[in-house]
Image (cartoon, rainbow, N blue to C red):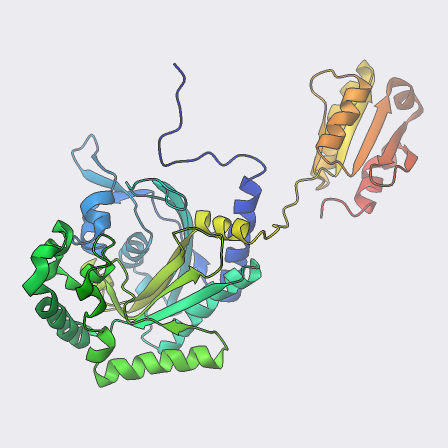
Length: 425
């Protein structure tokens, strides 16, 4: 009986993994320019971290976490998202005490949620995310939004839409919360069990329900924008003013609700706005949060962040037929003829690689013609042919596979000659 990959996971094979590396490389380079530094946290954490940090009324905590007990009877959970773990590290390692503030971090790695697998939604998926901790300035909101939009722009993605909302401060949210309870309570029995349980705990989450999205009360639900106090209105207007100043287009959507409990003020999603992407159009989500650091034992600290899945970026790139500049070609393929030449090729191959070139050779004792075919399949820029006779003469034949030009090169000058061909770049 063969063992197959678990449902909701995937193997990323050579030829495809280079696309992932390219996307991650672009994202990391943009973060470098914005002065964000990488953080790496464990793949599993204590379950309590996510119950407290993500919120026990969320679908993630209630339905989707991979939780298990270790041999010490401790409850551990594979991380379902990145923010809680980053904030846990921020508190535990006292990053709030460092001289340079705010603390600006990015992360990438696998996350795990028990969901029904479908296109763009896996049980193991890879997120790239950013967290800026320690500033309540609306300018940092604009910076984070500019950062993620820059990533998408540098990847060449078109037809994407930034959707923006404000969830207000605590006073505004409390007023909106009561308005939502009053709105939904008379007819709550018409809603799903999840919505009924959310009514008192977190009524804002009712607006995010996929089962009852067509219910008439959804369309008439009170907007958070109607309950923003003057301070929250001013904050949201300043964020928008910065985006206008940066010429970053956006759409305000008062129905936008983020799925986690810790969001306040700015909330946003980035959507694929073109044809051919499918039903799941959200590429990225994030927002400002208040209280999360305190919940995990740290000082009062505001934060803002976002996360996107690499899988959905790839889907969007493919939907737009965007070519990824992935380089897989060899610089040089060594063809050897004869036992002595074969032995020498091992040394030459090592020297080519030490010089920074991407090089390979035959390991299956193929005939000369088959070795050349292998060089073609590997898209080698140059093929170097060494036979026992050439070895005695101290020579090697180098062929430019694009032009067909062939040149005899002294063996002791071979490595320098290959470096001069502008290879290994």
